[in-house]
Image 1 (cartoon, one colour):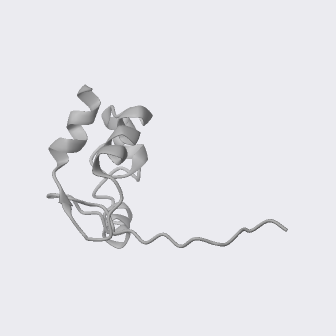
Image 2 (tube, rainbow, N blue to C red; image 1 turned 135 degrees about the horizontal axis):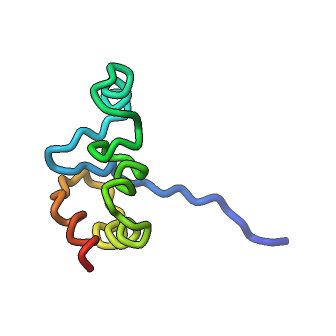
Length: 86
């Protein structure tokens, strides 16, 4: 028999300074037409970041740099922007 056991990984949510990350609040912005949809460049979604000019490689690099933590941290948006320059 193969010894396969399920693994549970715990991690905290990603918080960017001066950025609304709550899906409920982002959904409210979309439904009230304050932004032009989920892919609006002002939205902190993957599609919004792509429209802002972030490449998939730069988003992956950002995730590698910040790592996975169990404690909530506030990440500066400039650290995300620095990944696009590298």
